[in-house]
Length: 191
Image 1 (cartoon, rainbow, N blue to C red):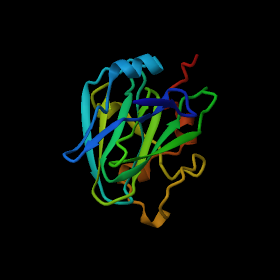
Image 2: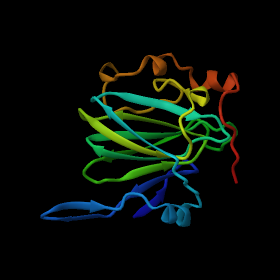
Image 3: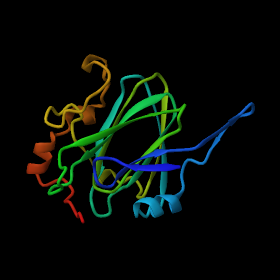
Image 4: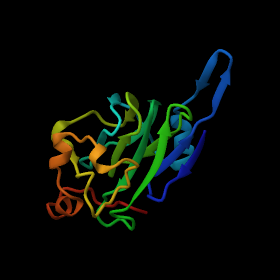
């Protein structure tokens, strides 16, 4: 397992070691101890989620109220995605910027993001399956979205806008500037 920091504090790319032979493959895809040792993040999993998405499906930009927030460990187990981590923490030196990592079922790589960061992905293949380990249970009243097509955030999707499928919730979500003006964003607790 190789853990590499992304350009946004609190976000990391995980390259997992695959063991393949004529029987198939094995991968140890999550280690809380290694994550803590290499990043300082204490990742206490309390819920596991799985989504199945058609090609072009965009999920996000999603985030939870802080505190407690919801850190995520994301892995694509079938198909492929472009995963986005967006810094939505008011006062952060990288506020409004994003980093992306391509995750797929062949490499078995992953992304981890700390509480207070926004998350989105786009499915690049039909029937793409994504798993998430999270550090807090889903609380509908504490979950929020920012429109993933916000031109100020300017996520770079590898598909034409006409091919993107968004939920009504994500289509109607405010822009990052609107969410900030309304005081709905997490505040940078940086070091």
